[in-house]
Length: 353
Image (cartoon, rainbow, N blue to C red; front, side, top):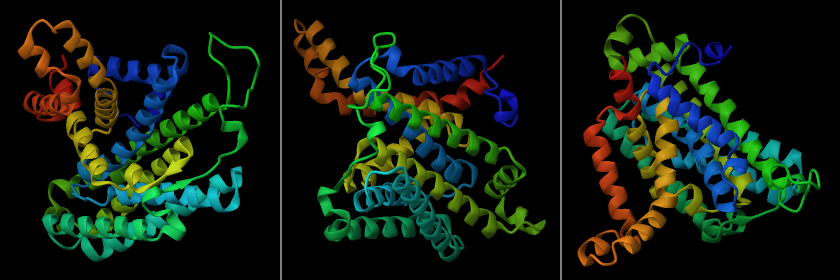
């Protein structure tokens, strides 16, 4: 049954299979294994970014398309849900139609970009998407009457997903079963379903043809495949998945703003996660997103502990000072690219016995 869900694309590495299983179990039981608000926030962010990074890998790793507009689709999904909840109230209907509207708008934008821009060379397409994404971010910031501008939108969600809601009065394994926990499992299972859907897509005849187009577009077109159609379809599918990830983030945060969805920093983070995990694998999205977000969240704390432990050694304690965490995050990225040029998943698969 599991092999059927994975569409035959097994990890193909014992160590990789163990890592994926550990991540799956940790996320599935995160509220019980790692109690605390910060741990739950981190686990939810990992779930959402696994979907977002996998959707970008579908575009970059499988279709060979470099785009800088992915956060635009992410933002469209988030703002679609946010606007629905803020205008029509905190109902399940608002969540559903807002999510659907965001996905549809993202698909339309992606279709337009694909049809008008995918005939140009890769670098020019990347520049076109960068210009469109920048213009969209400026537009969202300017339309304060609709989007809240730079301040963003705050809204409410159904009461069953709020921390004050209690499903049962008694704690289970010292964890309160409240609305926040229910919301986390909504995010977890939705992310799992979306990831498995993308895994089946890339291992379908469509996905295999997409890889053939990526490897040699001229040959694929010569034998009868419509290259533009395949690339445009991949762009639309990737955009829809990114929009759905944005909707999950909007529901989880109960806030949507340019800084949380549309910033270039998020786009760079997505690229880093794809490269660290391994392009063209989808499993790389799981590994890359988990490692990167854990480093973002806890590296500064770990460096604080290291600085205290080496306080008697002036030079070392200065180098590992918590305020230098971004420097060491960059060093870790450089080392990962140097030792894992094909990503962690690629290296593990190449070294399997």
